[in-house]
Amino acid sequence: DLFVDPISQNRRIGKTLLGKTFEHADLMEASHRALITFAYNSVSTGLYVRHGLFPHVPLYILSGTSRLISSHLVGSDCSCVAVEPGLQSIGMLGRTDEDALGFRRDKHHAFNIESEATNAFLIQRQGSNIGYAYVSSDGHVGPVALLDVSVSAEAVTSVLRHTIELGAEQVSMIVPGPADRCMAAAVDCGLRISEPLVLLASHPFGDWRRYLPRDPGYM
Image (cartoon, rainbow, N blue to C red; front, top):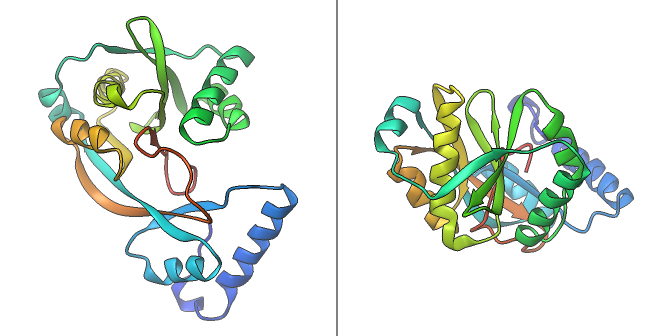
């Protein structure tokens, strides 16, 4: 996360922090530079644009109560199965990321699978893995990655059902604008848009019809 207190803005603090971040990215030989911020934050967006990060993908935070979602849920031929810890599972999740985003995130998965704050699930259809999803203890869904855009609505419905079964009272998720099937399924299940976000990046990447990020600080 990068944040400058409003009373301290216009003192080149944001520019300095961003410069340090880019120095670290160069050290790590990062080929992608991207971040998510609130769409209405024009000051931050202007700073990022001046440093070569341009708006590419609109995203939206959706939320709703489990009671409302339960009353709207329809059947789905997808199911959620807990991810077993281990290199085999991490490799499978990494390959799904590579297909949807263009790069792997194995270290993130190794950490999250072991975390007590999140539950990792494979999304399956007719016995085949079609993606994965993480659900946090507070009912927030994400990241979600899918191999096939044609089953994205069924996958989202299954993940929402599973989130409610875990006992969450409130459910939320971030859905990219291009993921219209995911958006339609979420809205049909009772979720509503609460905040607009935007993905800024040095260049376009990923298929955002098939990837739902976790939050602005953790893609």
